[in-house]
Image (cartoon, rainbow, N blue to C red; front, side, top):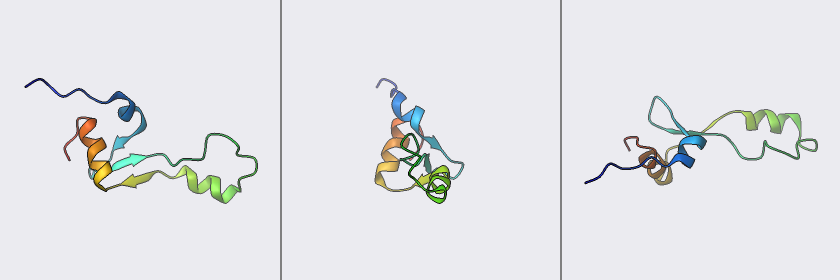
Length: 66
């Protein structure tokens, strides 16, 4: 059976944490920031960790163990 190819788009967007969770950026911090409060922008700065079925799928696509 041939080797599984890495899904490059997922590789650019996500990282796998030391505990095996999927680490991603929160949406909403790219543009139209002037009307958003400082608190909201500060909270969007923190990374988000995913652990569900979809996260396992992305980890497999990136060549990790899920």
